[in-house]
Image (cartoon, rainbow, N blue to C red; front, side):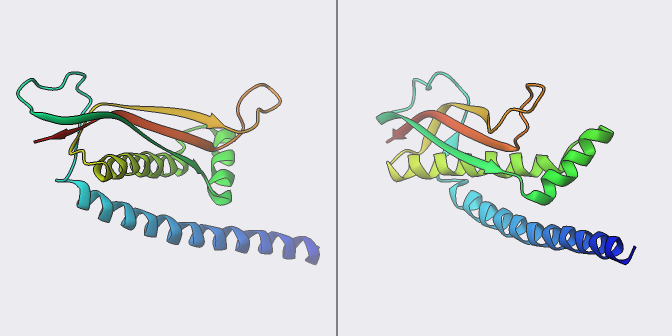
Length: 156
């Protein structure tokens, strides 16, 4: 009986450790994202408009893309797997997708800005799940690739 209690307490402590560690890492990544978003806020404009307004004087125009592959940590996977059994909203995985989307968008802005662009038109985003397939054919992985792309424009 003492052994099972020890294993239960150890498992609980490991979960707490990974929760704290993942929270620290996620918080620091969000701070880094926010600082980069503030930097590019007024430097490059992103829109989903398909057509470039005719009054803009274009110096150059090029296709630009960026991607990220992001995964949930073990703690988030564990919580999500329990939530899938019970059913309901998977908030733990939403932060992973939010960070991935924002990071991919920032990478697109950085790439376009380095090449001289100050606007991105026809912005699009695609997602794909990467990983293994479960026994019933569903994807059992929490690894996601996020691809963002658009037409980068340098104006006069």
